[in-house]
Image 1 (cartoon, rainbow, N blue to C red):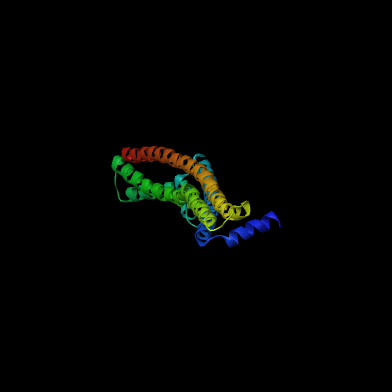
Image 2: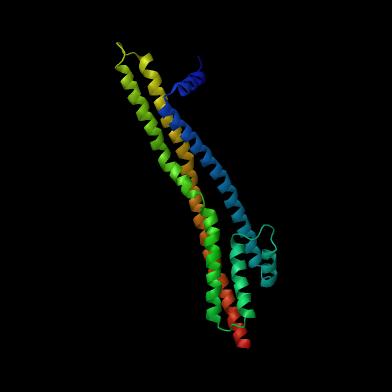
Length: 229
């Protein structure tokens, strides 16, 4: 009998509480890996888009042209471009409305950019809590299966005249498989959560820095416009 066959037989022959634990851990692992791959694509896409937008922004081009490009972006702007679009749209609205108070204009622009930033940050942080939950609870779920399997093994010993390794080994082995599955579900989730949480924080720092720099630029434009009048 091969090791694979033995493990398969242990899984099939496990008690229903242990089977339920194993099924839950498999589902948790599938959800975890789905989040990991989805979040990886999103963070890479956001970082690349932010790099591209910053290069265009600091190249000294016309802000109106950059704004039109963000508005016409396929699928809608996101990331840093969405923050810029919200702030510059509010700036244009205030100017067209004849608002000549620079402080009030900048305050409205910062409010719009803050809302856009919160929306973009929420997209990045979405599902990270699920990864953290899977990473923190899976070992305990697996441990419950282990405790149950060992408990059943000792209860089974009371029903036999002679305790041999052949009697004790299968239920203990299935119990240990539950522990291994709990770790298999938890470890990738914990690693991915720590890595992605750090990357999200770094991106949000970039958003904060850009928002402050763009606010200063808009403030200079607003004061120059008021001085011209």
